Image (cartoon, rainbow, N blue to C red; front, side):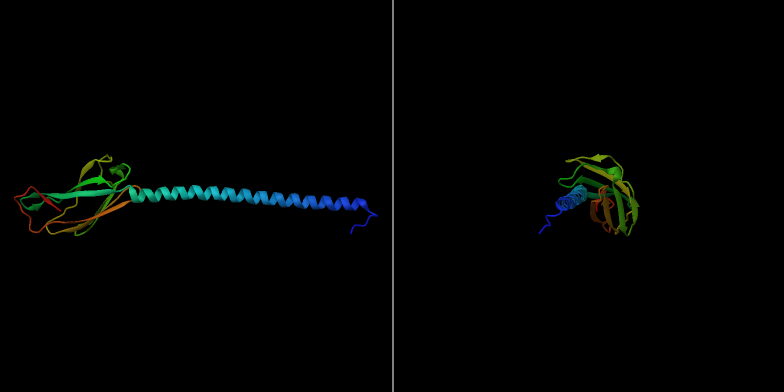
Length: 168
């Protein structure tokens, strides 16, 4: 197989094979490092996305009740909303909650104001929508995390002017 007349060439073939083997090991090590780095990046991105999704689903508000004050001429136009956290929700800062009203009265309020609502608490907010007798308004509350709560408010028609408040 090898020509025994030239033993020094036989050693050079072995060294060449060793160099090729070392090069292959280095290429495999670099490729493994790139794969491990990519896997770590994808894992951290997946954890972040998962947390954002959980916050959107769980960090929400519920509208417990909605009412308006009655005046001698009908409704005063302001709506009182009583809010509480959805089950399992983290505290929500009402300064970061956006309200969108569509229907007979449309409006967007960038902050419903107030303070932070904690678990087990209810907070009452007053929203000036200009709602009148017979109006139907869809309210969408959006938290800073992107969680949305939707409710439809319908003002009764006719209004009992002897009452102080009317439930919507």
